[in-house]
Image 1 (spheres, rainbow, N blue to C red):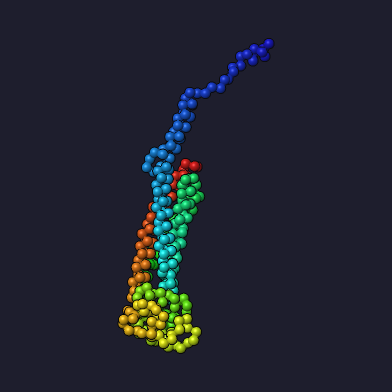
Image 2 (image 1 turned 120 degrees about the vertical axis):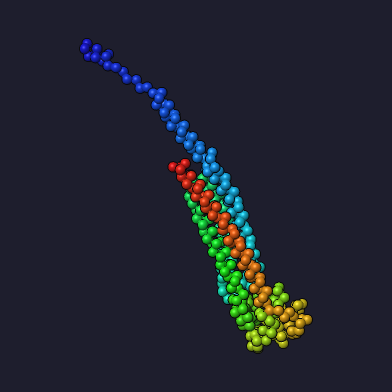
Length: 289
């Protein structure tokens, strides 16, 4: 009887939810939601804003890659034969390095678009490193192009004449390049047309020459109107007396200035891309973590 009475007197605890606690939790959740919403949408440095600007940058970056690719491919296919006449590989290295930068820019543009669209931080990190590598390539090529542009004429004076004198008729690659140059630039010889009188082609009497002499005074490619054996005469009405070194130097200088301007000009764009991609990388870390 006493035990039953004791049980009746024991108070029953019913769990209740405090309105104050509920309001506090609701306030906290609402604040977190508001903070997340603000981080993604509202201010000028929000994730959505950075993504939008980065998408625009990627389009510009991709287009710059196409420009670089177009210029370097044109240089390789249209001017490559002249490169073989140079004594150093500076021009070729610069051209192919810029070609690699153009290809990387196209790849980087695709990776950047995917990383921004999917909000994938590893892809954004890879994209940033590609931007950095393209920036370094373009800056180095641009700087070297301008430095080499001041030395190209001096190099040609030392090397082009010996190439004409020693390689014409002996090396097929050099022979074709010299013939094409003399026809395209309307020139004859490296410095002057008389240079051919001291060439291996004219004086060696070799039987295995790619272009047989057969009594010619100059190669047929020197002639103003190229016909078989037109090189038998070296009169002013038949051949130009100007050497090729001057026009080739002007041509290479023009190409180097073009490559340098593209390299140094476009590399500035990558700086903005790296800043934007790093900014988005950090903001996504704050939201996703």
